[in-house]
Amino acid sequence: MIPVRFTPVSLNDLLEIGQRIARNNPHRAETFVSELESACLKLSEFPNIGKSRPDIGEGVRIKVHRQYIIIYRNAGRSVEILRAVQGMRDLAFLRDE
Image (tube, rainbow, N blue to C red; front, side, top):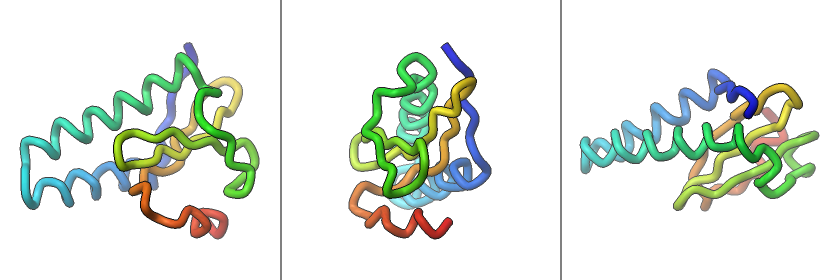
């Protein structure tokens, strides 16, 4: 297993996801963000499991978790979580980041 690192942007994504869900269901917000974090951490075991997305960036992969997409990079000695976004978003906006 290799370590998983969350970028500041990805941590902000998780916070915003939790806040959005909490408006209607605070308990589910907690459990869902925990699920999403666990899905990110599992990437340490299988860092190449996600679909490669070179159109977003070099070495970038995505993994779907429910209606969200975890965007990450296998950096060799670690997995870098870049973003966590709703799956319905057009991921082309990421090329500019």
